Length: 322
Image 1 (cartoon, rainbow, N blue to C red):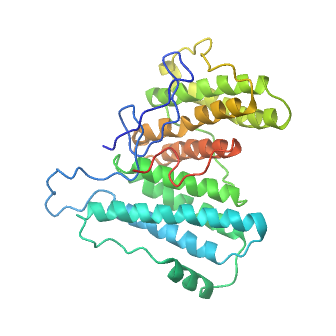
Image 2 (image 1 turned 180 degrees about the horizontal axis):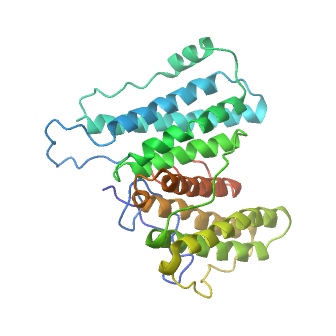
């Protein structure tokens, strides 16, 4: 299991609210790391193929295809900078997936070679007509059924990483104008919902406080995130059923929260706790694609809430790179 870095549970207490932890494959209370690598001291397992190797290769191929599609766009101004930043994130994803697959194959250098930037550009320019960023977003979004099938077939070892990867792709598609129409939230259920509630409840409380102490555009930003987060928290409480603990009357917050910088830092921290909490219980979705979709939706939504609050986008939301 990968190490999970120390959580930032000091800002909100009452048993402790999750501090901006990031996860990739998780367990223990510390921040998960991505990508996961097998224990180098473990003996190789005969001729058996490493778990999820085919799924990791398919995920890598999708990311490389997205980069090629992106290379066929020519957006102006700020949209061009958005496309460049997105390409940089996708390149990090390709490199990390290559690293994971190389390790799983024994480090013999037989993993799929990363395509050079020049090769991607040449292939992309010659492969078809120019695209709009919206076209790229739609193609990313249209891969969702295949992605869900892959996620449902993944093992607990790599599911957190694959969930984080898919969440970043869907949040990117949303940013390009191709939003996803999600069904009603159906998971996590029972005890699996409790760790997620333990992050969404204090996040709601903290956002209510910072919204009350702010005004103008700052307050509107908090209230926009808060409306969706309240709805999700109500759904999670219902899904948890009898397993849902009674919510505390309040949480201790860092004071004085007197300026916008302090308020924004708190808002970002509590929202950043949500995706790791979902990734840690991702294996509880089993092979049920509807449950997997619900978990993916939560990670993606948390990523979008963070973006609304100005949190820098990362290649694997909810996880840290080694």
